[in-house]
Image (tube, rainbow, N blue to C red; front, side, top):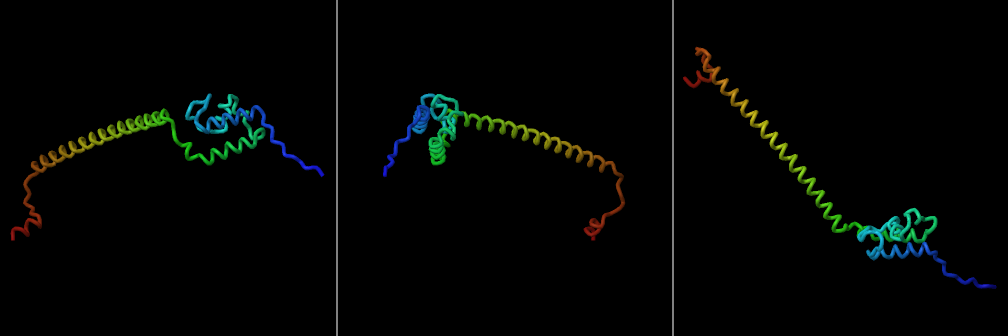
Length: 151
């Protein structure tokens, strides 16, 4: 009867590079990718200095699973943005607000112009109505409402 001894799994140099890159990204201290780069499978490969397609589940199933698990458990933490990204997002929001403000001003000016045109037209029609009523010959017809007031 022979007892099998468990040998530690040999880790390739490539996997060591990926694991080191993974650790640096987890700590937020990358050497290659910009600081603040979110941790992803592709970014681990980039941080290791290789093409992202080199880190595949078929070749490194345990490592890829660890990366995916870490991403899943820390997804809420990963939503924070770098100060540059926040500044760019704020600039974009400001630009959008300025465009919306300008559009609203144009709409207001157009509506005000239409209102003034309508008021001018009403005034002209009122004056014309008064002028035409003044030209009517006086009528001997009395309105029923006027007759009730006379009694």
